[in-house]
Length: 174
Image (cartoon, rainbow, N blue to C red; front, side):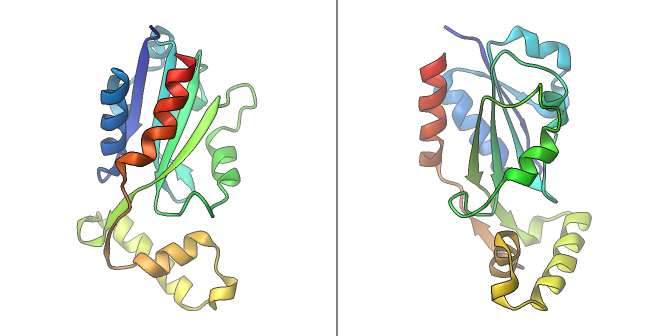
């Protein structure tokens, strides 16, 4: 049996919830990103890294983008719909080194509660929303549409069933 670690960086809890579910289903070690060290990565056959998407980057991904792993699987968590969102730029920013790339990437939908946002995130979203309000819908990208649709609300897209493809993939390589 392969030794698996699920390493996650979660600010408001959605990423943590997915990481806990995946860890539980796979019997994997669950490690919070701030506790993970680069030298730990070699102890595992499979590293699953997850971070929330903030400002078009994957939170905490530097750990795995700068340190090679035997098998690196990444899952991101964000508000946009993975079926319509293009993550190419986000992935290039997170993994600029062509020698260190994830073997497989999954994208999951998260949640937002404007009442729980910290000062910085709340003000960033306020500025983004003001910019979005000035645009016609035909000019908006996927992120801007999500900002428009969720601004000021409590929205939860978290779905345990969405981890099924991840579990199946890991079981297929473990």
